[in-house]
Amino acid sequence: MRRKIVLLLLMMILLTCVSYSQTQEKDRSGTFSLYFENDTVAGTDRCFTGGAKLGWMSKDLKNYKEKKIWRWFPFVDKPGFQHTFAFSLGMNIYTPDDISRTDIIEDDRPYAGFLYLAAGIHNISRRILDSWEFYIGIVGPHSYAEQTQKFIHTIITGVYPEGWDNQLKDELALQLIYERKWKFPSSDSREGLGFDAIPHLGGGLGNVYIYTSTGVQVRLGWNLPEDFGFPLIRPGGDASLGLNTRGPFSVYAFAALDGKVVLRNIFLDGNTFQDSHSVDKNPFTLDLITGIGIRMGRFNISYAYVFWTKKFKTETRNQVFGALNFSYSY
Image 1 (tube, rainbow, N blue to C red):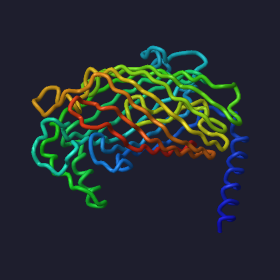
Image 2: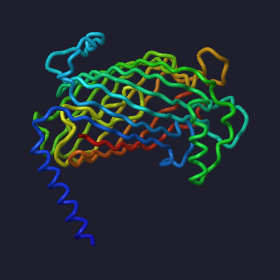
Image 3: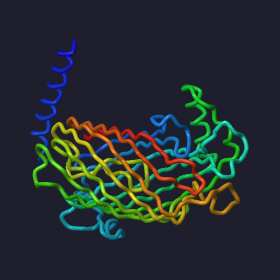
């Protein structure tokens, strides 16, 4: 039985390499992506307790007739770069540490949900990725985060969440994000064993977040993909972009560091225009990420272990959660 499984895997790898050799001269592929993040891996149900996102990225729009739209966005209308549109639908869920309590926990974060649509434009070369993303959504009861978490807890074992009556009130969410990534590979060839570093710099402005961020991701592996690193469910997180998202079999490990200066976080500061529960946030935060990725032809799967430093002053411990990404290029 084991021999059959090994032979099947070897055949799949061979087929993906043949498929790649026939399509490697093509421009950037379109991509569908599915993201899941949850803190179950840490045995907790708190803070950022879970998120999911479905995303689509267009092919290169080099034949797009109306190109004036690119001129509206700085750093995007560049000769020699590929242009893509992206759309996504997602939900994030936030809860305090003790979800069995029905009262407001004054020294812990409020219950909150975020349901959103996002649209982005991206300017891509082999070494640079410029991204503009616009989010529109809702924070509050009509995000349906309460119903989602309660439904999940009827399926899996665990403490039933009792404090959603204290969640943030309904508020229209508007958010603009810009981020630039640079890629520094160890060689021009992506074949064989390789290493690259992908620093980034960006920021966000809106009633959900106001922040600046910077960091770097490093990857080591076999046949490193031509994308810009592991994506997270966060503003500016659609990083699985590149000149060609299809390729030969690859496997790699990665680690990332991301630091933020945060002026506003609605999930800690509370509602913008109404009174609500809030906590004192930490203005400086750090995220650490480690994981592995595998690509086979049109398919890519990656998993990461994410560590967040404390996001608010009365938080008793750091946050840990797992992040899983599936993508398919066509």
